Image (cartoon, rainbow, N blue to C red):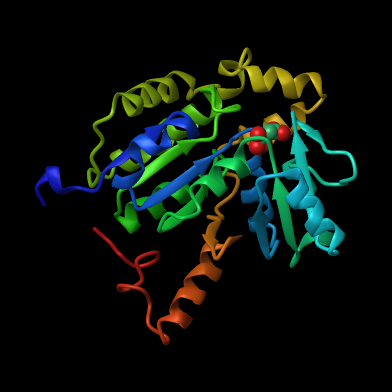
Length: 267
Ligand code: MLT
C-alpha cells in the first residue's frame, strides 16, 4: 500500500480542539490517565459488566435514586452523597464484578460523552497500552487519540499516554501521522518513558491528587501494561472488547463485522 493511503493516527490535546480533527477519524481513543480512563480499564478487566458515562452529577444522582450503582468525582474528590469516585482501587473488588456502574468525572466522562456519536469509541490509558496498540493496528482505521486534559486545558499525563500509543502504532509501519500535536506527544512520551512518575512530578493534576493523599492511585494509573482490557462504547455503555465483538456478531446474524474488524484483521 502507498504510505499516503495508510490509516492516520493523531493526537488531539484537548476536547476543545476535537472539532478541528473529528471528521477525519472513525475511531476515537479517549484518554484520562489520572484517573477516569485508568479506573474504567481496571473495572472492565475486573469483570464489571459495563460503565455508563454521564456528563453531570445531576445525571449520576438520578441514576443513584433509581437504584443504580453510581460514582461521581469532581476536583479529584468523591461528590457528597456518593460512595464511589474514580479511584481504580474502587473497581478491583469482588463486590463490583458483574455490576453496571454509572460514572461522572470532571474530564474523562465529559470527553466520552462529547465523542459518543463517533463510529467507534474506546478507552485508553497507560494500563492497557500494549493491548490497545495491537487493537488499533489490527483495526486499521483512522484513529484520534483524544486527551481529556483538565477542564479543556492541555495536560501532561494524557499527552504522554497519547505519545506512547502513537509510538507503538507507528512502529507497525502501517499507519501515518502528520500533525505537529502528534510529533510533540511523541517527544514527550520519549522523554518520560524511563520514569513517568518522576517526569510528572510537577504536573498539576498529580499535585492535586497528592494533596488529596491519592498517591497510590497515581502509581496505579502510571503503571504501564498491568491490564489488557479495551473498554468500547456500545449504545452508551462501555463494555469489554469481547462483549462488544459478541454483540456486533449477534447483530450481524452470527457473522463478524467485515471479517471481524476488531479481532482478525491482519497486515
Ligand atoms: C477526571 O475525569 O477529570 C479525572 O479522573 C479526575 C480525577 O482524577 O479525579
